[in-house]
Image (cartoon, rainbow, N blue to C red; front, top):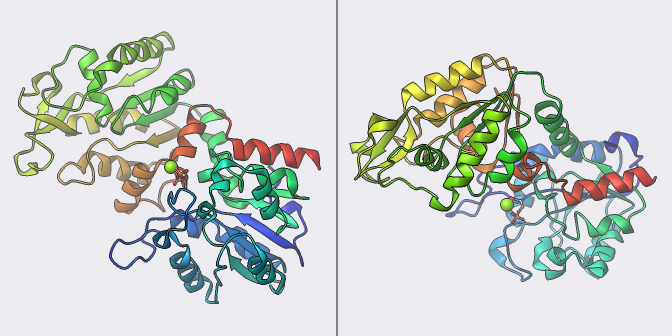
Length: 398
Ligand code: 3PG
Ligand code: MG
């Protein structure tokens, strides 16, 4: 990908689309997790240090085209100012005369953050006039917002045909590089661990990945549907009955492709998620009628880590259990710890897995944690992301 390294930004207005859609603390409204802010610092610092005028643009939440004060980017501006050790002014809007004069007044090496793009309905509509307005702020357009590149929105897609020069930010380039290293062109054996609540949201991922992987590990509540499909009784566990035949189809596909599949062999059951004190481990064949499955058991964790020990590349998306509700975090944290100590290339994607890796203190020990949730999943599904497609087309044109 053509990155920032290939464009001259000195003295230029550099419009950088970032994804500052970060969680805010419910009590004090401050940034609760700044991973997405940290991720774009190399791009931002390079632009500023090279004498460019950095214009940061982002969405936050889903304000649905209206000004929602709770979704202002003000807390992000303050947080970023703290990191940079200098003031980061927040423009009152992302388009219009006031914004333009603030941008015009920026010194070389200066930075400004525009207000939430999604306060305008035109952003999500990919409106051409709005795209053009945004583009009028840019001498150079940089997309460093991988996590929103699955959206064909004005600031990631429409804007591109109106800007003179395009480049990928370093974070974007890194996301694409790790996707290539892990899924497209991996060192083998390649294992993928898929967890999370619902099979229905992971079908596209499984269909695309099964022909590519050597080992497939299925955990989380979605494993219940596979277990039921294989004839096990799963008690009160969450199951998607409509997807039982799909689960069988996927297992058959894996078998045809010689993929080694691991499903839970033991599970942690309890009367309900709130009754952790009554949790106990049972064999998958002995799940009581009046209990539900909330995690996988120790024998499963052992089988999983043994299978992963022989792999050169491991990709993980989706927790193995209800890790936000102790004591159902054990398997997920054990997997995170294993990945942190593994010598394999370890790539983690998806909001829940990323947060589990962080909670387990392993976020700096694994090879790579993607900033993407939905975008990461769509890459895993083999889809081409509109933001990346438009960016590549634009870079090819120059
Ligand atoms: C995300 O967090 O998934 C991205 O910022 C995109 O946000 P969206 O799902 O609201 O489009
Ligand atoms: Mg999303």
